[in-house]
Length: 373
Image (cartoon, helix red, strand yellow):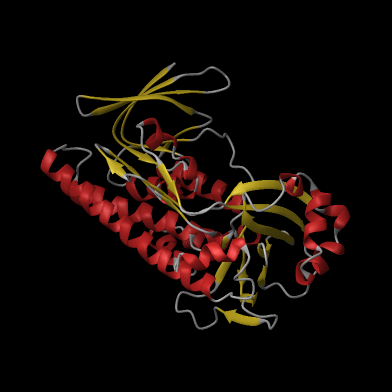
């Protein structure tokens, strides 16, 4: 058993948690915990060009470029079969922030963890949140692991960066509000196509996505609502391949690589928001606060941006070091307003994107999204 005192405890060592840790380490002592010793493979590899501003501010961009071969490839743009069978090309060549990046998500998270530790962030993983209580302006946190090792942590402020599970917020009785039932079933395989642009293609029950990532690998995912498809369809690779035959663009890629496809199964991809994103001496960031439909390609950028917004408020208010009820109220109000503004813009643009596809407006998947417009 170990006893640790820290200014900021961050629960969740993914992108949001690591960016928050790195941004705060110059002004606070920071401890970062995660239930996994090593990040797992994840779908969601599109890093928006604007994210480079954050990486540059944190002096991570140069190091990222130095490890480009392992971490990312430049993405010239997106080819879209959306609204018609005619392909539309959306390029990033004129974006002032440069090109989009297709990441090896696991490698990128390992890179961020390593960077956080090198900056002086105390890391504890694997460590699973066991209990939490607030006494005398200090959070008392107990973590456990499969090795039965316990850590008792005292923290002045807690950041929930545990993704859609929002473990810390839920431990405080905070609920999540889903606005749809979107799921994604995904596979990876060797890339054999000369065209390395990402692809989005709509079908009557959802939409397909494909992107090339480092080490000449390709990600392919199908997005639909969990109640619109038989569970057995996403049970194994054969049923996934059968489903893909209804889409000629995706079927053409998969047919060439059947023997080398890795089936990863189903993950949540729905839009959700935490009922309350901040409370007494805690706040949620990234997917723990609000989660986005992958159609937006903004999930990782939002994780990074919300971490930076919270850092600015924490430094400005100095609330971790000098708790004050008036400042605490102002802090919570400001952070809540920031997240609500992001959510409103996200929902607005999400509705525009889905409205652009009207070919199957009488089918449940699309009808649900058009009714919300």
